[in-house]
Length: 190
Image 1 (cartoon, rainbow, N blue to C red):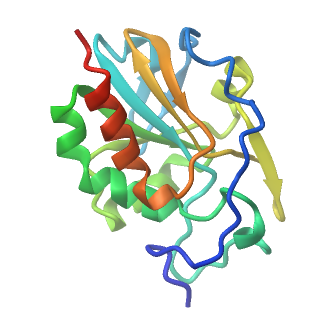
Image 2: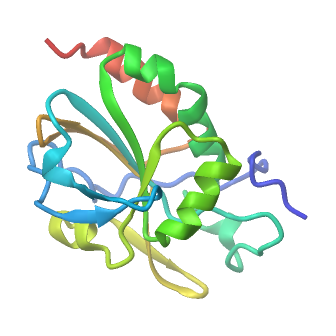
């Protein structure tokens, strides 16, 4: 059985193809999406201040195989380790000015709820099974065996409803929350 909380050595590093260059300055679209606690979240109602939304392809589940060749796809592996890094730095991110932290993928809310429970995440996951956010913002996606479309790993810093900064590509994912934390501390919200 694979341990989804650690990263294997030798993973391919994703290259910056410019697919997120257009995002800073873009307003979040007026979308309402289901969330892992059974509710719904309207993206235009995130409130004032900064919100961190990290997008990831899919979270593995113990005993369930990942798509064939998953480790060979640049940037695919590491969703659980990334979630755990955001969990472990959640309080520090809030202290650095993030009013909210959310994970977002195309997985169903019930699947995400299991991940929130199993990994003991202190934040909610957003489900975008129809890729509504991806279509509205032209976000990068990729394919994998058994999956016609998955979100590429990307993190948005949203300030007062507008994307202030986009992290892309992200590697390694297991220390990405620390990268976000450093950015928040270096760019205080005044």
